[in-house]
Image 1: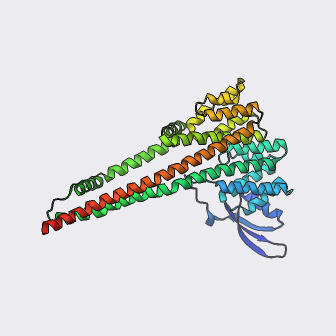
Image 2: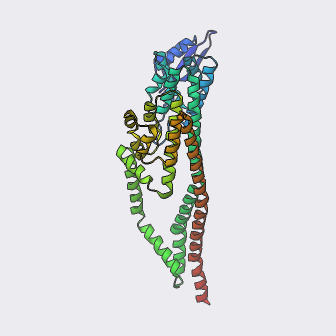
Length: 402
């Protein structure tokens, strides 16, 4: 979406110039005409060309989207019409990608479409869970409450993701620092000491000879190692672009000993929390199951949930259908069965997701508490080996010179 350089005249005769972000020339003109301004000229502002987003960058951040929905709920409850509410929010949004999306949504609503229909054109930018929540709110006539439930859901999901990322940050930094330290010692320090010791024609200790040999081997094969890393990264990204490749990679992730449990439990938690939200919004179980399965992050597990709507169509209960996926635990299945018999499926699904979120958090904390001392011990052993490799020859040289 481009910027336009607009020259405008106010009612008191003042001439102002400003750069305006709009989907088209026509929309830009309409905005200023509604404000009662006299348009002198409108032209494309080439100085503010939007730089394409980095491929790995998320266009709309979760916190910005949650903030948009919070403001929307507040304005709707205050009695503002939907279109006016979106106009007010657009004027305050700082994220350009979100602003562009909301402007396009506003145009769709002006064309007579509902909010869910307007957002439906942008499925790549918003989740199907959000679209289903909007549809449920429009059908029930209580859009604000339904969006409010989605906000609570999105906050929990965002908080869980942030907690996992924060927990893994410290070990990642330690590992990277370890490899950087080893790289500096192996490539710069050890070779200089090796040259220094060779001048004395002294026999180097075994640990020093081994480290020197390793250093020379690494330096000789560095181009091959870099080529291997490049090819491995290229194959990985090519696989991620294909559906079958994603399924293959996610299947491998499930074979990681400790990570398998966390991945399975997070899939159960996300599925149950999403299904609970949709059922509370008035979506039928058959439709809700199909949408909730898309919240499962692991593509291999997602493939197993694709048949759930067919099982339910054939008259099977939710618990019986989920049992056929082979990854729902007996605890989750028992709780869902109880929820079905007690007519409290939504509440039981929410309880399941809370239980598994706590278990995931506990497992991550345990993993971090174990991995930190392991990494520190590893770094200590590396440092000790480096020191021995450097100082043992010095003692030998002193012995020789005496």
